Amino acid sequence: MSILVEFIVPARPTGRKSVLTAALEQAQCSQKEISLVHTMAHSALMQIKDRALTEGAISEYCNGVLKQLQTLASHATEPKLLKAALLQMANDILGKPLVDKMLAAAFEPFLTALKDVLTRNGVSQQLVGLVDPFAIHAGQYLLHDDEGDSDLMQELCDDIQAVTSGSAQDMPEKLLLLCEKVLGKRVFAKLMEDVYMSILKMVSEKAGLDKAQVNILKAMVRRVVTFKAETLNEMVGRVQNLQLFAGDPMAMTEAVKELAFEVLGKETAEMLMASQVAKAKAAVKSVEDMASGMVASSDKETDTTDNGGVQI
View 1: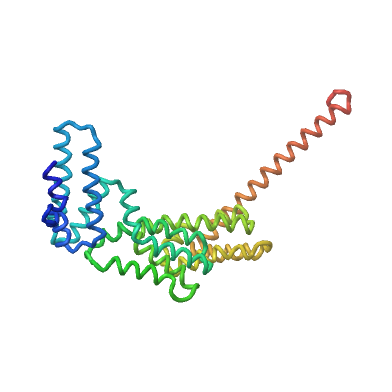
View 2: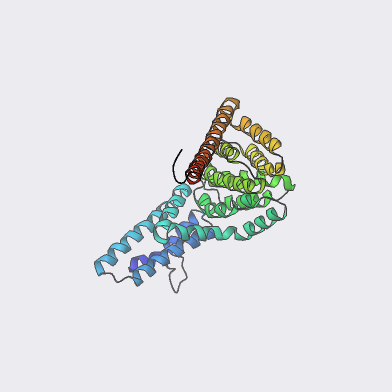
């Protein structure tokens, strides 16, 4: 236990830096990264203090934590390995949710301002909602930086501010580009699926899309989220604008058809639309058959009643 404390805590009364702090500074870690490591280290000490552990268990736990801390120090001249080890240790000791929250805190002032500006400039709330998952992944993005660039924090803050520079029309596309860069293609695509479906639900409710139109637009989502940010933003905007055709069924049908042709290709779109029409006809026939059966049953009961209970 004493070895672990000496490794973490600065020497007193000399004021000499701890072994860990000196190693992290040598690796040119930022103050935020150094602070994170010390938070983890002190958390480890508190966990030892709070647990009712046997002497052997305490020794084993201390050795495990000490080994992780020494791994960090051993990567002092290898920023990429250091950051990977730092992230792993943080997640092990503090838990990923807490680590994400701590790392995201540095961006909070920028992201609060970003959401406010986006909202005031008419960006849809569905797209503004991407800022929150962006914040969660931003800290992990910095620690996963392959180049170990000490200026990446400032670069990312500049990128956040750049989203709201220029015209309001360009803001959604800039936001999508930044989110894709930080979140990675897989996470970004999944989030955009959620955004697309949320927008589709809103448009369906406001514009009164029929079931066939909704199904066609749903079929487009997996393809739409693979587009580059510029085209993705355009497609999302066009789905939103379908509500402008509310009350004009013919115009709505043409707008949905045009979108389906562009996204899915003419042949696939036509097959899908034909399938939806067939389903709609089958549903109508089912209702008609049910109604006919009810009428026939009613007529039969009437005949029985009119003839004194004797069927004709």
